[in-house]
Image (cartoon, rainbow, N blue to C red; front, side):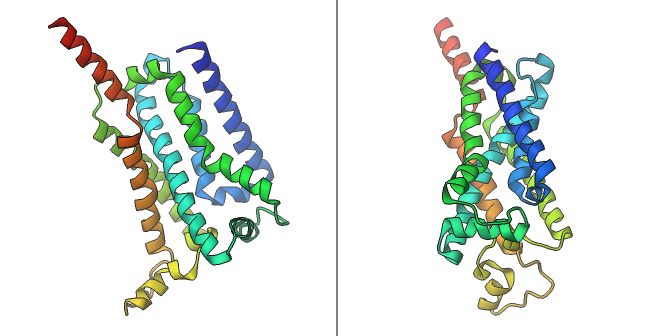
Length: 249
């Protein structure tokens, strides 16, 4: 691992852990949002020394889950923002409504604060992981050498699906739902959709369809990005092996 890669890894660990710890001490209601569970995942990932040979298996599972999680949060949040804008007519108004509903803010935030905070929470982690991938390329190639792209993407997708499902049950146990937490339109509720289809939604969670749709968009879209748009490091490792093999023939 290069010196730049090492110090970037340490910087990201301190950045995320300080933010998560400060949030837990000053505003624990933030952890009612899946976003903050995802930030905790980034803390775990950047706490691992990728240069250590004994950490290869841990990196394999956690890094894929961290990337899928960051992409899923970005895609899922963008989808939710569209629903919020549809309901409230304004992105900032929607974000402030979420904060008031969750008890995480006492007064409306200024637009520049909302934009800065939400960029950091939902889009910055993707950029950070791309920089980490570039700076720690050699260590990650060693981890992924010989792995199959479809399997690695599935591992990351399964890991984050598990985290998302646990959060979903946590939200239901608190007597709320994804629709309420993220202040989505009534048109997204199970009862509304089933009513339009002439079906009875009695006994079903109001966010049943909504949560599953987000899983498809967020986690499914993230896995596709990971597999197609972000060339997995094990493909680079295989490519180097193949090019070397051709030269020796």
